[in-house]
Length: 451
Image (cartoon, rainbow, N blue to C red):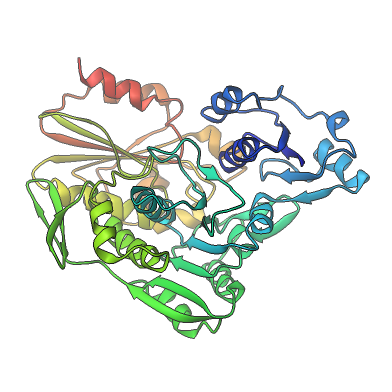
């Protein structure tokens, strides 16, 4: 098949393009701007296009056009594809078509889905069980975040609730029709698409109705909104609830109780332990027994950017985390403080998404950074302007977080200077963002700490 990607540089789009290229399909693509790491990965396999949109490349020889969310409805290549009557799909629609004959395992929820998916894949890989998959982040030991075959029985999919494409406004996870599904929790997000909490919750209710007849649902029972939805769902006939397992922390190491005794883990934090409990149920439904799960999960170090340890010595421990929603920021901050109770915790949060920079949503961050000994918020006024939102001031941030000693930075230069001048003595530095603090290279900063 000849498959053309419009907006090939997206995080999921470029991974899918590479997977299909490796599968032997003819792949072309376009984008107006492609950033790292997508650019280097596409270039390595000969799929990096020239920047820009080129409708002349859209011909009747193309079998399928996969449309990314970054493209606009009036994209010239999209308009040409429509004129030619080509098959146009979003990437979740394409993945469903690919997996109609497979057992579809979908991991959804407002937070934790990438980590849970990565945990499951780690366990399956450890026990040499081959599956197709689509991950939301790069995982150590796996060359690409998407892997597709004809022969594998299972496909493991991360179920994002954001929109599928500019011309398909259904949430991505509504398209997969899972045989087995996990929902980790519901915390209001994507306010630009779902303006009320009720609108957002409705998407999960619809998701449960898209499950196949006789399917299996695994859900986090500590989320009361989710628990109510799960109990009322009619499509899944088997339902398994999970919650935080029993655990202990000794000298900065977390141990989980198992039938064979206490097991030391590479990960920590109650949200990660909840994720682990959910992942165990899914793995058991995919043919991995409990003992084998525990054996494998002991070596799981986490998904990229999810409480990722960048540097550690006697003076400082440096973590980066993708946390940006209020519930995840609070959970991540609390987890790090609980893991290192005797260290001074410096928590830095970048407000970067449309929701987090929206005045109507900002109050959801109330007390989110309370467990930090020192709390910093960074945001870019330019990002607020680009998103065409109401101007934010320092007072708005202080009131939203409800913390008088909160430090607020709006200049990348000043924020970097603040970090460079910091004298770390016995600290944990937690960097939470879905962006990069206006261009801060955290790996380079980590290397400076070694000097």
